[in-house]
Amino acid sequence: MLTGRVDIALSIRPAQVPRLAESPELRVLEVPSANWVFLGLNTRLPFFDTREERQAIRYALDRRALVDGIMGGRNVLGRASVTPVHWAFDTTAAATSPVTDPARARQLLERSGWRDRDGDGVREDAAGHPFRFPLMVWQGSGSYQEMAEVIQAQLRAVGVAVDVRVLEFNTFIAKIDGTPPPAGERGTPAPGARLPGDTRRRDFAAAIGNWTDNLRKDDSQLFHSRNAGGPRFWSGFSSPGIDALLDSLAVTMDRPAAARLWRDYQRAIVDESPLIVLFYGRGINGVRRSLHGLVNDWRGPLASVQRWWQEPTAEH
Image (cartoon, rainbow, N blue to C red; front, side, top):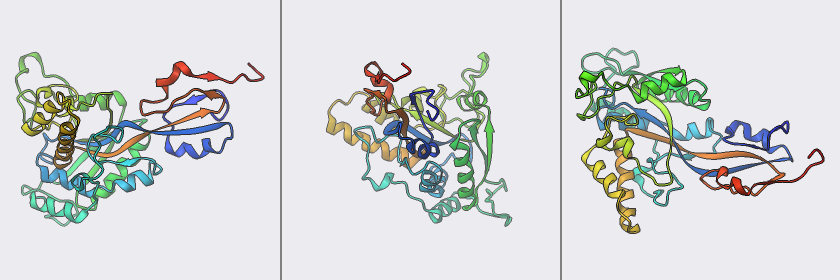
C-alpha cells in the first residue's frame, strides 16, 4: 500500500493503521465484523470440567487490557458468541458484561478445591496436582501470541500457571479439531468426554482462536450435542438447555420471540463459559483514494467488488 504496488489491503493490523493514515493517498476504513476471538477451554479436562472453574478463568481475564494494549483499542470487548453486527446482540445485560474480578476468581477456585497447598504461588487440587495447563496459539497469528502472554500473567495473579505454546498452523488445527478414533473404537468416547458421540481425540487444554459467523448465525456445530463428534466441537460442552435454545433459534421467525431466545442463549454461553469471547473483531482495510465504488459493510469490502472503478492515472 505505501509503495503504490496495491490499491487495497484487507485485514490491516491495528499497529499498522497509523502509518497508513499518514499517507494522503490512502484511507483506512473500519467496520464491525461477524468475527469473534475467544479463549477456548477443553471441558473434558479436570481443569475446566465445572462451571465454577471456567467462570474463575473468565473473571481473572482483563479483556480491556487485551483490546487497548494489543489491539489498539479498536475492538469491542467480548460478551457471548453473538457479535455486534447481529440484530440480537445484547449490550444491556449485566449477566453478559465483560467483568474483571480477580477476587471473585480466587473465591471460585477455592470453592472448586484449588488451593496453593505448598506455597509456590500455584494452586493444587486435593491430590497435589497443580493448576497448570498449556495455552496454544499458532505461529504467524500475530497478536494472538502477545495476548497469550498477557493472559498468562493475568491468570498467574490468581494462582493458575499457563505455559504458552506456539505451534505450526496445521499442527494447531489438528490438535483442536482432533482425529476420529480407529474404526474399531468408533463408539468409544474420548477421554473425559461427557457425551457418547464425542469420540475425537483432541490434544489441547486451551487455545486462542477465532470464528466468523455466516450470514445466518448458527452455533450448533460448536455447542449442540448432536455435533459432539464433529471437528468444531472444540470445548466438548453442551447441555439440554443449550440444545433446546439452538433448536428453537433455528426455527423461530417471530422477531420478539426470537429476541428473548437470543437473550437467553447469550446469557447461557457466558454463564457456562466453554469459549470465553475476548473481543469482537473489526474489519480494518487500507484503500487507495483513487479506488471508488467500495461499500464497506460488515460482510467486508469484497461484497461490492463488482462496482469498483479506478481513476485513470498518468501511467495508465
